Image (cartoon, rainbow, N blue to C red; front, side):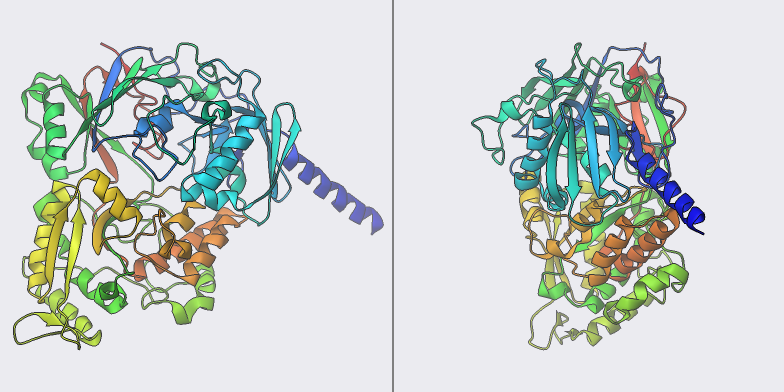
Length: 595
């Protein structure tokens, strides 16, 4: 018996030692797919030629080069082209990281700590080395002065230690198996470049990063260019082979989507992402397409649908009652609107994780999903446990059945049509609200929706605002209803607190735009983060999906299980596509220019 126990102890010790040994990669669950000696990512062309320029169109403008704070508007490209993290993703796996600035990583047996060792050759664009001091300063500064999502993770760090000339260890104060990966993706900034400056203040001072590109010419609110750094330290790493192929990446800014599309048709832009199936069929017959100068490519994906649609701000009294939200979801005639906007070709998001194994299954909750929901049964809304399905119509304009059901729900919530035809509550207050908008596509949807609501005695005002005003009102939750998109991955984690966590009811700058406060959601996110197996993780995510969709916080639109990219014929991408499709890490990362 003693010998047997000793043997078990030796096996456990060996397993713990294996987990804490330095490695070049780590995965959220199981083992990383790529071997330690991989030569390139599976979805790149390792022999892609270097050179050329690609030009994108963006809506709005920019007045800052700091993308990590609430103040100001920074170009998207600064985050993805200029700065780097300790590790980088393989977008052909749900969530695995491979060494970038860090040559190795190791964790405690239960991931209660993580230690990174920097590569000796890692350099910023000014030639100075990336140091442990830069890592510690970056993580602390982001956690204390950066966006809320950085603070959420930093609050879980109990201790930071320099463990060697190029190594640093972070010890956590709560169990959270995702934290080592989250820190692995934190951007590393040059500490000395911020001397004498307040990190929380925005500005257009040139950023110094370690990434493959540096900021070139720019004019605030009009354009910005990123030039490939010929001295980039990491160009020969396996994680980078076949990537970062363009000599210059340029972003042009436009006030509205119509002007942006016309610029693409006129040849000013290299690529255009088309979100409307109808326009893809009807409006791509202009001369450049007919000549073959513009190519139409369809890129499939296997990632969750996420959620896009009109968001109820439940901080507003008018939307606090779930029955009111249920009624307004019934009044949204999706089948008719989808036919008008998309020729009926776009699938509807039936949950937040549609198009993936993470999405809730039809019917009542069972097995592990039911066990996770059961402790919160009394606080859950109808449909979470029993099963919830979005209402559907026959596709005609009248939508009579759903409008009758909507009237009944509104009456139960205390809203009735007065003799003057206006829907009013017991105090005589009319039911009226504003939809905040930013694009003409959503304006068309909102107009169709507003017409339907008139038949219920509801008055809707449509308010189209510019990007700056939209961001300011959204971040301070100063809206009744607005359109929003939540993009979700195959490995949702800590960001779920930012999207649905109760702190976001009052804390500004989160993405809990609906203002949901759900003990069940908070607990289920914790279950997801600490699941020890993929099976338990999927169960927790499906349970969270049920809480979200039955909460009736959003009027769901459609989603795209493919991307429609129109681009110049000289632009090419690999035949082998990542499971995430056209998402982060794809365009322009693995594309190249060739005549």
